Each structure stands twice: as C-alpha cells, then as structure tokens.
Image (tube, rainbow, N blue to C red; front, side, top):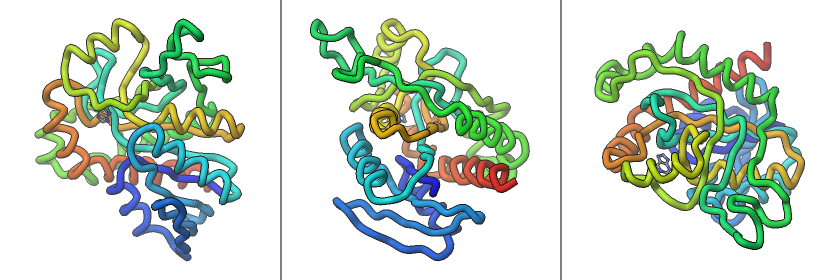
Length: 251
Ligand code: ADE
C-alpha cells in the first residue's frame, strides 16, 4: 500500500475526489482515507502543519496501515537563488534547520540518530522527478488558468532535485532567507514538515520521497503569495504530478 501524505488540505480534497472504494478511519483528529487511486491501493492523509503534527501523523500512519512506501507533498518557499514560484523541488535530502543541540551534538544533528540529513528513496525520487517534468511540459498550461500563471510569472518552470530544509517557522523576510543561505548554502527551499516526516520514515526504515512546489520566495511577499498560490494553483500541481507518477508506475 502506498501512503500519500500532504501538507495541503486542498490537495487532499482533490485526491479524495478521485479515490474509489473509500474507507475512513480517524485517529488523533486525523482522518485516514484508504481506497483505490488509478488502480493503486493507497492511504491518504493530511499531515497537519509543523514538525510535531507531521511526525505524529506519519507515526500513526505507519503503525496502522501496511504501507510499503510514502510520498509527501506540499508547497515551499524558495531559498536557492534562481528558483522561482511554480518550480518543483524533489528532495534528495532533508534537514531540520531549527535542530541545535550543540555543544552536545553538532548543529543540525538529530540526537541519537547520528545524522543531520535524511536521504529520500532514489527510486521514488526518480519517479517523482520524471512525473513532475511530464506534468510541467504536458499538463500545466491546460490545468492552471493563464491568469494565475501570468500573475505568478510562471513561464518556463523547472524541476530541481536537492536539499530541503524544514522547521517550525514560516519565512517571511529577505533577511531570514539570507541568514539561512549563509548557514546552509545547499538548501533549495524551506517548509515546515518534510524533515520530520523523513526522520520518522528513517526510524521505521520506510522508503519515502518529498515533492514541493515553490509557492513564494520566503521573503516579504510570501504573506500574499503563499495563500494565493495555495488557494489557486497548488492542488493542480500536486494532483497533476501524482496522476503522472501513478500512471507511470502502473505502466
Ligand atoms: N511553505 C511555503 N512557503 C513557506 C515559507 N515561506 N516558510 C515556511 N514554509 C513555507
């Protein structure tokens, strides 16, 4: 069974519309939907927001369902220079930018695990990156209205693979982004759940992948761009990428 976890309620709502033979179970204020999606047996759940919420969701998920792989999606703020709204980041690794148990452990290292970075499953990651590229080249223009693409200047969006940083903080200033770039120069984008999901999957030896659409530049404009992108565009990306991913796997 494949787990589909998202930090976007809009994405969950879209996936549920396409889910057949749905069964719902509730644990800890979370609704877990099982069913069949494009022929694949899946469990679908909203992560909720922040590291603790997402970790709790995934722990419950892995304890209650016979999951063999997990895909986590949502939006993110751009950190790497050149990355633009509408680009897609597929994580190769994730780090918790707010983890700091120094001087007991090196900064960013998760105590007792002996590592700061969690690596995604290369097979899932490759499949997601391919699906994202197909979505951008073949589906985007028909699935996202022109007015919204123009508003966000989405003209030739790209798929990028790299380091994703997570923490319990919404970035909303250029100064904060600059400071993060200085201390973690490889970071592509920032969000609030991925590395927590990654830590739980790592501890449970569960193959996982993370895909994030850039919704804002994590600067002063993010307070306007993030809600508009989330409302008008994000679900078309995540549902479109997921549809291409499942179709290729069914193959
Ligand atoms: N997710 C999307 N945009 C974000 C931002 N600017 N900061 C943190 N998480 C985000």
